[in-house]
Image 1 (cartoon, rainbow, N blue to C red):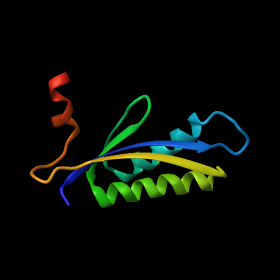
Image 2 (cartoon, rainbow, N blue to C red):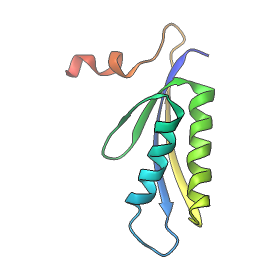
Image 3 (cartoon, rainbow, N blue to C red):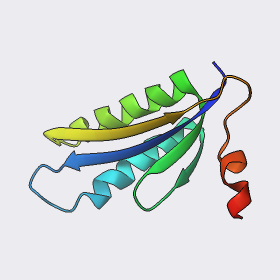
Length: 97
C-alpha cells in the first residue's frame, strides 16, 4: 500500500491513578525506536509510512502500556491514505507554513 499517515492518541489508565504523561512518553519511545517519520503534537502523534508498519507500531505501543501494568488503554487512531499519490505530512500542511 502507498505511504499513509496515522495519528495516534494513546490514553492509558495508569496503575494507581498517577499522571499519564510518563506513560505517554513511553509510548512515544516506541515510535522513536521504530524509525518511522513522526511529529508529536499536543494531543496526538502523527506517523508517516507503510500502513501495516504503522499499525504494528500502535500494537507495540499498546503492549508497552500493559507491560507497565496499565489495566486498560484507549487508542484513538486516524488514518489518511491516497490512491493516487503518497500521503505526507509536508504535503498536507505546507499551505499553512
